[in-house]
Structures are given as structure tokens and as C-alpha cells.
Length: 75
Image (cartoon, one colour):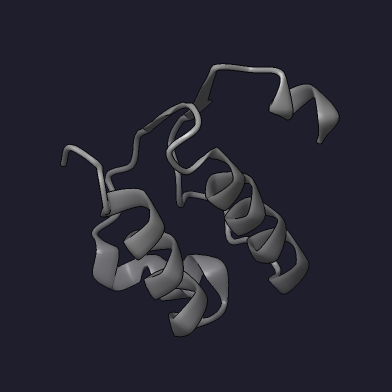
């Protein structure tokens, strides 16, 4: 996790093809939240937002992730 804090750019490629357990979802959300307005983030996915709940095991986590990613994002 400390190595991620040193980076100016975080690339998350092919997001959503592998389901993430609850602990993994919380860690990913923390990484994205810690990056918010501090560094650049590139995320690629072919999965529509309505299906993110199945990846993150929780609709609330998916909604929070989408909110955090799209607030200043370019879709």
C-alpha cells in the first residue's frame, strides 16, 4: 500500500472481470478514495455500472465506487 502512495498515476485495467470479496472491495475503495483529487487514475472496463454490484458483492460499495470515480472523471 505504501508503494501506491508514492505514485502519481494509478492504472486499473480491465476492471470488473474478476469478482472482489468484501475485504478486497474495501481496500480498492480506500485506494481510490486516497487517490481522490491527489493523483491521476485511469480505469478501463467494458462492464456497465449497473453490473458493478456483482463485482463488488454489494450495491452500496459499487455505488460509492462509481461516485468516487465519476465525480471529476471523464467517461
